[in-house]
Image (tube, rainbow, N blue to C red; front, side, top):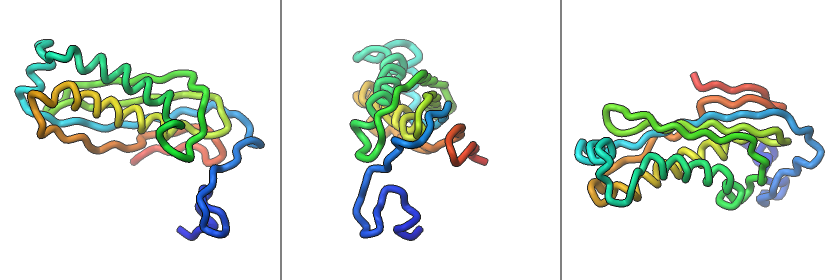
Length: 158
């Protein structure tokens, strides 16, 4: 992409925050997913409730919600948004857990970064709570699945 097509870069190549002050607030939603893979011992420890730090799935759910609410503090050019809803789901998989975050707002800009941040921090929280059992865990596949609302319209990953 050229500089003139990047909304966060001005004509001189300087980083800027996009002015959304004149944009209308519209209903917006974003869904992001990711995963964390881990050893059988780690999966068993979670399933049995034997993780010394507590329940990593409940902690991850709360951490993901909190992270979505703090995205503007973490990602330099994100706007603070009034989030209407944040949901973080963790589903056991063959190798660990799949993580999905769904975020909604009525605002002049989207919530893709909030959904992605929720997934990433939920995965990091699981890692932190289970690392005593398995330091080889892998966090990955964090991606936007769908977004609706706004001038650019809907997007769905194929």
